[in-house]
Amino acid sequence: MSTSVRRLLALPEWRSSVRVLAGDIDRTVRLARPMVPDRPVEVGELVVVVQPVPTTDWRIDALLRRTADGDGAGVLLPAGGLLDTTRMLGDRLGVPLLAATAPPLDLLIAARLLLAAPTLDRADLVLAIHETLGPRIHTPEEIVTTVHGLLGAPVALLDASGALLAGKLPHTNEVRVREPVPQRIQLGGDVLLAHPVLLPDAARPTLWLTAELHGTSAARADIVPPALSVAAAAVQRWLLTNRLELERDARSRAALLGDLLRLDDEPPADLRRRAADAGWALGGWHIGIRIGTQSAVDTVARTPEVERALRPDGSEAVVVEHGDGWTGWVTYDQEPTADQVRALAAQLRTAHHELQRTMDLHMGVGGPHPQADGLATTIAEATDAARMAKARPESGRFLHVDQLGMAQLLLEWTRTDTFEPAARTLIAPLRGQPGDLIHTLATYLDAESSIAETAAVLGVHRNTVAARIDRIERLLAVDLSHRDERLALHLACRAVTLADGE
Image (tube, rainbow, N blue to C red):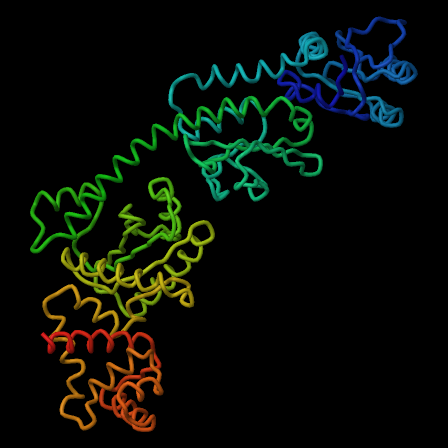
């Protein structure tokens, strides 16, 4: 068998013990043996000098020339200072000149093992990772640290979007996170290896275990993937264990949120204690957030991603897996100013845009409301806003209650017994006006704002309808070209006409 000097330098025994002083380390090594004076150097032979040699000894230069003449692979010397002229000679002849801080005989044995049985290096690495990690559950940080120590290369754990979760890696953006297969990516002379971590029945990897092999370590790229596979199995064990804990916590948080939203009065002491245990402040002023999903999403697995997006500056946004998405809120000690509310809305819009890169979402944001009952109110507002945002691609599927006006108020009223009186109050200025303006408005909105169709239904001239619509807008101080105001008035007209017809 044969290998290269570069591959020898990637061996664990050689990696931190041998320094390249001169020459071409891509030369082929066919055998390695101790130096014997006056013995010819064979083709591909790595000559190992076992005994210390004076740095000025002329025999080093002579050995370099003999190695070059015999087309040898290189010379390994015990560490020590060398003359610059000797290094220059090695570079000129192209013969690798290596200096060893470890005993040369130990390095010779490692080299001979690699030449005799190349698969042993792979087996040793896999076994070392298996024995180090063992059956015990290890955290991602422990796994990454173990693999890094055994490879001597940067190792990292990435999430499904390619974001760094543990370790360090210079080129995380090179991993093709949507392709659920082991990957080998050439980066010039370096090699990036990535192994997917899959949960049972998952179509896409949940995490990626990656290693970037630099310099001589890249020569070991062929034996690292099986070792990464063993380490990825350890990550999977952690994932499954952690998933059980996350699901239990998610059920607990969702149950607590449900109890808070069903409150009709002040929360009892037990509920306040449960909220305090969860780190939720019920006092102060709250602004609700609702994130809905357009398609099936593993909300438990994606919660950390949502939390990172909503807390870019370390803010204390609460995030709870709730229904087909997430419900959350931000709490202020004092009533937030208009500028604070606008700043939060802008921050949440940015977070929504970031999350939409990997998930099909719609988001609504409520207004500020105080205390525990205010929390339920602002979450209800955020839920209504999210429902409307879902049907508004032109808004980026993001809406804040401040953008909704009358439509949001009417949607709020529809959940209470005050809806019909509120609707009557809204269109009261039209009562008693000539031209039956309420009926005209209802017909106009049913006709999707078509003056021609409205005129045909009412049996009047189009100009008559246009004049009536102009009067309606002036009396109600509305703009019927605005979709939210049309929706609010449409709901009000329907409620009043249905009630009057009963």
